[in-house]
Structure formats: structure tokens, C-alpha cells
Image (tube, rainbow, N blue to C red; front, side):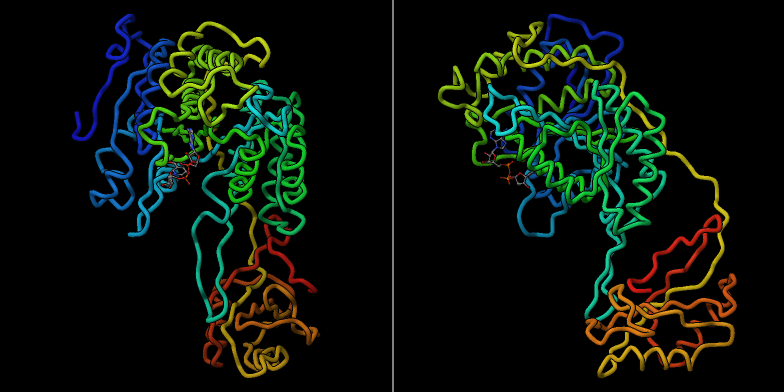
Length: 500
Ligand code: NAD
């Protein structure tokens, strides 16, 4: 066994049962703050429910950070995580200052965890909530979009980030959302994008959604523009069932949903990948209540049931979830959800755990019992056939801050520099057309996008683009970057400038 890992067989926790042959080994990290208490609680419930799991335990988080691992994880722990199909992770504390990197982001990116799944549900009348009928899940694309982390400052005044949306990435997450709806007995998937503005990137995600939705006639499909969708989510969350969306929107929507449900401390979240998937509570390490036997273990317990369904142990997940619902219903509540009049008994972490264990095999009477389809969801990434692609011109970005910043002066200067066969179609500043025929009111930075096409309207090639760039360089223009203008399958694959 490797250094830094500890193997705990199920038999160590429950002596009443031998390990069945279908046992799945999962990685466990207790984490920091309340992590060890809620992880012990979760493992005890899993053991009592005879979950067919064995555990390899790793140390990550604060201790690893302070030992000099800036990502909060040791190389040995990586090996363990990579060899098991699931990782049940306690919350960790990221030390403040000192350039420590978020372990969650590192794990998500390194392990290709493409789907983030975050259910938000109200347990009214047993847990106070202003939206008693709310029961939705946000499925968020987890790797692409603005989170690709490709950022540049290109001039004194202008910084940019690249928003990457891919067809395989979009198809995979959308398909995951529909498969999830089927597995968890949900009836509607809502896609949210801003494709009225970002027609190419968000437009691709929306198009893929329509294509995939057609393959799932049993599930209702709808699209909402993200701004009105987010407003409705905050005001009428009961309208939603499964929401699928891009990375940044999903980040914001899942926080809105948790907050509105009033049950942040009760929610679990999954990060799904091909080889490894990670399951954790939504909340953090709560250092203010650590070691006091008051933390609510429900978020991590819920994450563990998601893990069981993912690994194909749906029956055990159902048993645990129904026992947990029955516990909530009987009014046995930890301090965070205890309300005078609503709750019957205020208990600590350990007593709550005992209460769940005592109810294993029972079902709730007033809250709806859960029922899961057996078998995890795996979606292979698709690959597109190469498209017929023609180069029709190029957008050249310039750093230009001559006094007055006159678009006409820049346009005329460029036109005087152009090699034969090229034409300056337009100049934009922050996406707004300023040449030819711009408005004097338009604000102008030092960052100019100049669109060049062939004068005969035909296709070009990279050699001709290099000739153009050479001429601009010799003419004294500071080229920052280029974006090629392609036609794919005969259709323009670039946006027009505002006012073009
Ligand atoms: P937090 O979620 O830890 O705590 C916020 C509040 O909720 C606190 O008052 C806390 O006592 C309470 N709370 C949280 N979980 C609870 C539970 N299970 N039962 C009862 N009460 C609970 O958020 P924070 O205080 O902003 O962050 C503390 C630390 O956790 C930070 O170091 C942060 O970086 C880290 N964090 C980690 C994760 C993760 O590992 N996934 C997520 C969020 C925050």
C-alpha cells in the first residue's frame, strides 16, 4: 500500500456482514473543520445500510497545504484518487493568503469531471422554506466556457477572456441532463443560455440542446434566456425540474437555487467524469462549529447516496435516503435546521446519525419517498466529422493609441498600407463599428479590431494573410492578434460587428 493511504474494509466498520463480491472501492478524504465528524457519520450510515463499498482513505486539504503542497494534495493521494471510480470528499479549508490554489478546481480540471450536478430541494413543512414545492437540479457544464482560463491583457486598456464552447462538450452535458432526468424520474429539462447575444457560442449550446432533446420524446424540453430564467428561478423555483446550462451560468444558478431552497446545509453535489467522479457536500468546512458535535451530516450523506446511484447501487441509496427523509419528518433536527414549533428534538451530529440508522428500512409518510433507477450514467464524448471549411478573411487586432484616436485616420492609414487584393471591410472598437461611417459619440479604447477580406469576395489562404500582416507590420501598425474568418459548410462562422 502506498504511503499516505489507509485501506478500510467495510468489515472494519460493521462486523455483522462479510464483504460481498460486488464491493466497489472508493476514495475517502475526511477533510478539515467539521469534515471528520460528518464523514464518520456518513460512513457509519453506509456501513449500517450494508453499502457494498470498501474505502481507501487519503489526507488532503489544510495539512497538505501547510506541508508545502500548494494545491492541497500530495502525489500519493492523486494515485489513490485516480485508481478508484469514486471519491467521497469532506469539505476542506483553503488557508488564506500564500498563493494556495483551490483544490476543487484542480481536481475538477485534472480529472476531466465534465458534469456538476447540484440538486436543491425544500423539505417543508419539516424544514422552513419560502418555496415549499421546490425540487430541482442544476446540471452545469464543468470545464469549458469562460472557465477555460485563457485570459490576456493585450493593451494598456483592454483585457480579454476566451469563452470556449465546444460541440462535444455541449452534447455530452446535455445528454447527461436527459439521462439524469430518466434515471431520477424527472420530467422536464430546461436549457438556459444567452444566445440572443452570443449567437455562435451560446447558440451552439442551444442548437445541440434542441438536437439531443429530439432523442428524448418522453422528457419535456424548453429553453429560456438566462437572465429571465435566473429571475424566475429566484421567484418561482417550483417551475423547474432539471436545468442544464454552461459553466458560468451554472455556477451562479446553483448558488441561487441552494439559497432559495433554504437548505444549503442539506445539499450534496456530484462532479462526474469518465474514470473518476467526486461527491461532496455543498457547504464548506465550517471551522466555527468544528469538533462540537453540532454539524449536520446531511449534505455529505446526500452526496454519498448520489455516489451509490452513480456506482449502480441504487437500492442502498434509496434505503439511506428514505431513512433520512423519515428522520427529518420525525422532527429530529440538528441545530442548523431546528425551529421551535416545527422540530421535535434538537440533536447533535452523532444522535442524528443514530436516528437515521434506526430508520433504515422505513419510508417517510408525508415527504415523498425516493426511487432511483439502477446503474450509473456514462456519456461518451462524441467527435464531429471535419467540416468543409474556407478561409474568407481575417480580423486583425491592433494596439493603436494615436492622439484623438480617430477611426478615419486609422482606416485611411490601413487602406494606404494594404497589399493588392485585400480590402478593409470595417473597424470596430469594443465590438461597435467605428469605420467606415462610425458615430463620433462611440467611446474608443486603444484596442481595434480591423476586418480584412479579399477584394473579389472570394476565399484566401494563410500565405496571403501573412503577406497582409507583413505589410501592416512594415506600415508601423502594432498587431496584437488575429482571428480568422471561416465559412463552415458554406455558412459564415463569425459574428458581424454591431452596426456592420
Ligand atoms: P461554510 O459552508 O463552511 O460555513 C458557512 C456557515 O454555515 C457557517 O456558519 C457554518 O457553521 C454553517 N455550516 C456549514 N456547514 C454546516 C453543517 N453541515 N451543519 C451546520 N452548519 C453548517 O462556509 P465558509 O465559512 O465560507 O467557509 C469555511 C471554509 O470552508 C473556508 O476555508 C472555505 O474555503 C471552505 N470551503 C470549502 C468547500 C469545499 O471543500 N467544497 C466549499 C466551500 C467552502
